[in-house]
Length: 151
Image 1 (tube, one colour):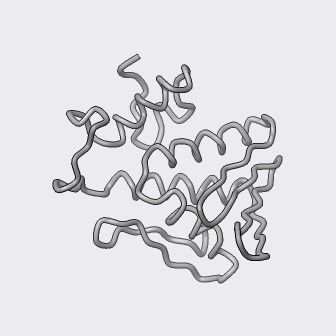
Image 2: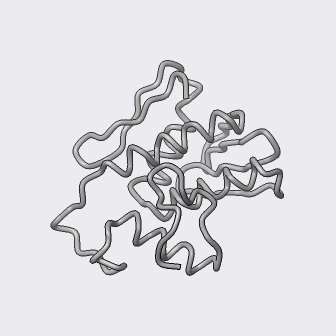
Image 3: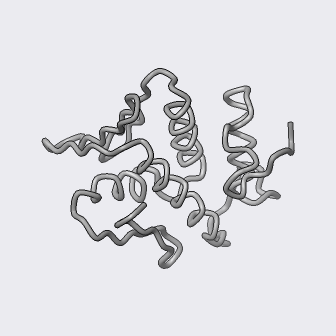
């Protein structure tokens, strides 16, 4: 997304922005989604459904709530009177970039994982996501998500 860039710093995804209007979107992804592959898979699923014209979806977070409505995504602060509006295309680009940066995050050897610890973390969350929702993730075959596996 123009004006918004995600990068790794000390094991966390952080952002740089050229426009303060991008702060709610950047904070929603970097704080509410955070380093959690499962949450990021949920966001990518919401993007996919909204792009396909499916019913509006809401993605609540600790700080912001994002609501997908047609070609628009509203990002509302949960405690302050602050709402930002973004195009679905811009949110899609930002979410996809966020995922690709998150994929480069090294595993933390001091953090014990219980969810399929023998697999890379993103694959463990992918398989758990698909088992939970009983469908293949819509981003299969894209953005480093394998086209097939563990069906």
